[in-house]
Structure formats: structure tokens, C-alpha cells
Image 1 (tube, rainbow, N blue to C red):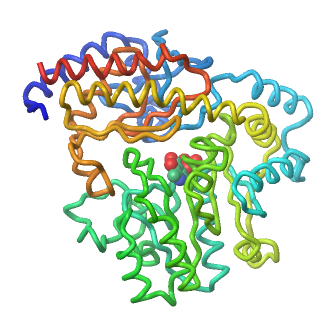
Image 2 (cartoon, rainbow, N blue to C red; image 1 turned 90 degrees about the vertical axis):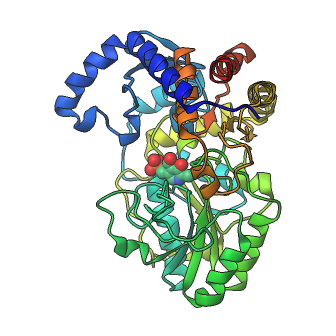
Image 3 (cartoon, rainbow, N blue to C red; image 1 turned 180 degrees about the vertical axis):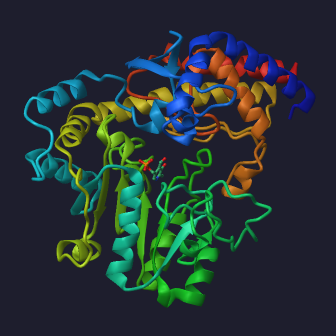
Amino acid sequence: MSEIDPRRVAELTEREGERLSEKLPRSIDFEKRASRSLAGGVACSWHALDPHTIYGARGEGSRVWDLDGNEYVDLHCGYGVMVVGHANPKVVEAVRERVGLGTHFAMPVEDTVVVAELLAERFGLPLWRFKNSGSEVTMDACRIMRAATGRDLILKVEGCYHGSSDGLAFSYWADVEQAGPRERPIALPNTAGVLELFGQALRIVPFNDLQAVERVLADEGDRVAGMILEPIMMNSGVILPAPGYLAGLRDLLHRHGAFLAFDEVKTGVTIAAGGATEWSGVQPDLVTLAKAIGGGLPIGAVGGTEEAMRVVVDGTMEGEGTFNGNPLSMAAARAVLTEVLTPDAYARFGELEQVLAGGLRDVVARYGLPATVPSIACRGSVQFRSEPVRDYRDHAGTNAQLAHLAWLFQLNGGVFQPAGDPWTFSVAPTEEDLRRSVENLEAFAAAVTG
Ligand SMILES: Cc1ncc(COP(=O)(O)O)c(C=O)c1O
């Protein structure tokens, strides 16, 4: 393993930051204007980047362009939303047709039912409801579990992200100094303004640890309504479940009369037609989806078994929302599920994964970088830690300075991807596009080890 000098990393970070600034004069200037009317100059706190927010202009296929006209291969895909590629003609056509027919009625339309049928087939769950974001459907999944069992506690995994609702905005990116023991973490709010009170209805457990779940169930099983988790973690880099972990969770929870909910907002229709549910062969009681199913339009979906969804069907749990099942989003989702994310698309993801993840692993090995490259289909991450990452605490121990510098090399080398988050590629890139990312990692590796 190569020794990496932190002073060299600091020098290179400054140099690459300056190179980036030179490419972004309009964005830097625009940030000043934006900050006068848009709080912090951004609509979502995660759009603010270090050293500069990059303002976007347009996208087409595998590429995006910023306000300065810089072109990037897009391995961000808008947090994994744009798996269909930018301005995909099938989605554009479906949306264009729907706009001309009216876009909102407070009546379900045919597409709403068709999309529910398509998801039922993909995820093996018969009943669905729609919302407009991932946060709303993870919130609903918890309500359903609580309403259906009459119990109050939800188990949540440390380092999993389920959106911004008060009930779940806990123990993501927690400061490990404050977060208590690894095997029984404390529920820590993700942000100021979330009452600690909400955390009292959660029990936090580490990923990949059945014993931790068993302990909570042994102590308080009669209060546990269910557990929600990302079946493959994708908000602390990519972390795969250990063999048997997901099946073990389902058995443990069912033994205690509690539900299992897979938050597939990221894994959803991206890593396989039926997401992590299909990939793992473990059928949860509830699945939440958002992001990629809408092909770039706002959407959220929660699906469940007859048993879990009974409370929704009989009205015990009201599922409200003015824009639920919005016809525009439904038209886009129908096109995504029937015309774009077809079996051919998933086969292509497998081939391209070899090019990108395989190429990055080769660089890591040749330069002896302290890193691993977990990947699955169109998603993956470079985790800057010599040992494989099994849970949030391992991820929190990765080298954030190296990750930031590698990200700057990617941006300066014409690849847009999330800072410290997994990459996502769409159906659109060529192998050549993805090799650009491999070349950038190689330039980074040569610079930090040289
Ligand atoms: C796994 C997971 N669940 C839920 C959400 C929240 O989705 P949204 O931002 O659409 O509210 C996210 C967003 O990143 C997510 O990654």
C-alpha cells in the first residue's frame, strides 16, 4: 500500500481548486447574484459545492453542460435520477404528449394504474401509492408499519439516508464521537431544527449486524413496528449487505410480528428491474421508490403486501397529497418502465460496470491506493480505506481529504459526479466516456503517490 503524504494532498487540493475556479468564472459570478434571493445560492443544501457551486445549463444523453459552457460526462445523474440519460427522447415524447392533454385533475389517470401494475410486477408487491419524493414515501412506509401493528418503534440503520422528514432525519453522517457505541448507536438528528423527541421513536442499529437487531427485538420487540433500511447502502458510499443479512432481518422481524421495509429510492429500478428486492431474492413487506422511476420528474412510490397495505386500503391510514400520482410524472414513469429500462438496459449496465469499476480497481491496484471500489450495475464508489467498508463507522473512517481531491481531479478532467457519494451512469454513455473517469483517477493516483 502506498504511503500518502497529507501535505502533498493539501497542496494538490489547492492547485486543483484553483484550476477549477479558472473554469468557472460565470458560475462564480452568478453565485453572488443567486445568493441575494436564493438562500445560500442553492435550492438544496447539497447543491452547494466546495470550492464553488456549479450552475447547470443543460444535458443531453451522457453529458451535462454548466453555465460556463464546460462539458462533463455525467456520473452524478442528479443523485441517480437520470438513469435514462438526459433528455431521453422516449421520456420527452411521453411528457410532451401529456402536457397537451392537461397535467393535473385530482383524478387518477390510466397511467397511474399502469405504473402501479408495472411496479407490482417488478417488485412482487401487489399494492402501490404515489407521492412526489423519496422523503414522503419513506415517511409513509413508517406510518404504514406503525398503523398496521399499533406499535411505535422503527429500527433505522446508522448511515442510511431516508430523506428529510422529521421522523427519519437521524443518524446519517453522524459524528462518531457523539454517536455512542457501534453496536447500539444513539439517534442523532441530521440537522438543527429536528427535535430529539422524534428520535425517541427510533432505534439505531449498525448495517450488516443481525445480532444488534436481535438485541433490540429481545429487549423491546413488542414495541417494534418494523425496520427501514437501504438494502444496499448508497448514501455512505456503496456498501453491500453480507450474505444472509437481508434474509436474516426479515426472519427476525417477522418472528416478532414486525415489518421489513426496503428503501429502494436509490437501488430501485437501477441495479436490476426489481431493484435490490430482485437482486437479493428477499421479499420485503414494503418497498419505497423515487428518483429514477420518474425519468427526471418528481415522483415517489410505496408498495406493499396486502397485509401491510390493508390500513391504506381501508382508510385507517390516510395517504394525502395534492400532487400524488401527478399525470405528468406518471406519463414519464410509464415510458421509463416500458421503453427505456428494459432487459437490454440492465445487460448494458453489467457490461459498462466492467469498464468503469474494473478500470478504477485496476488503477487502485497498480498505484497501491488505500481504497476499495464496491460496485453494482450502474452504481459504485471509491471508498478511501484499505479494508472493505461494512458499515457506517467504517465509512466514517475513510479518508475524506483524498476523496475530495479525487473528486476535484474528476471535475477538472471533465467528469461530473457527487462529492463523496456513489457514481451513477445512465443508459447513454459510451465506453470511451467511462474511460475518462478511469484516466482521471489515474492522474490523481500518479499525483498523490508521485
Ligand atoms: C435512499 C434514499 N431514500 C430517500 C431519499 C429522499 O428522497 P428525496 O430527496 O426525493 O426526498 C433519498 C435521497 O437521496 C435516498 O437516497
